[in-house]
Image (tube, rainbow, N blue to C red; front, side, top):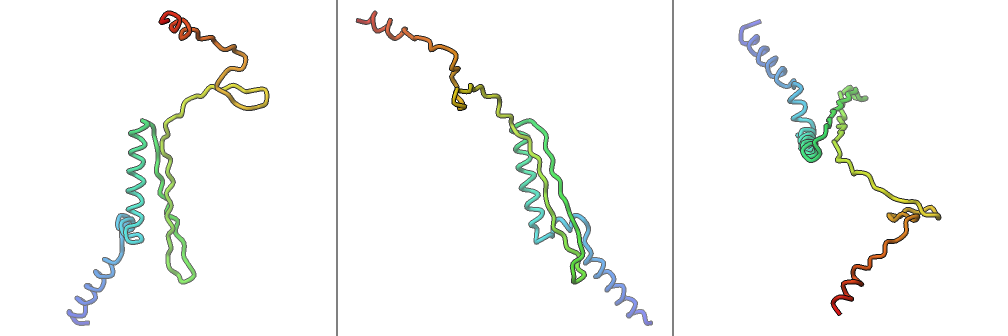
Length: 124
């Protein structure tokens, strides 16, 4: 084999090696950047939720790989997001005799507010 042939083989190996991608390149180039864009969006939403609530959250990226019938490797990534939520607080309600909810205690009598009546009597 001559020297130019070996140089050609070396160039070919370098070109083939360059076609290989690492993990970061995989994330960046998956579906023309769709995975990276979706991850950025989810991360920004997570940071906003953490700032708003002061709580904790998590983002999990699942990258399942399988070989299809043509012998190609397929990946169908999925994000699992757990955002912190602001607690809604406790509401107080009462049950009526017919099984409905009310804000008023049915066992408590109404207060008579005669302040308006007294005021109107003084103004006369």
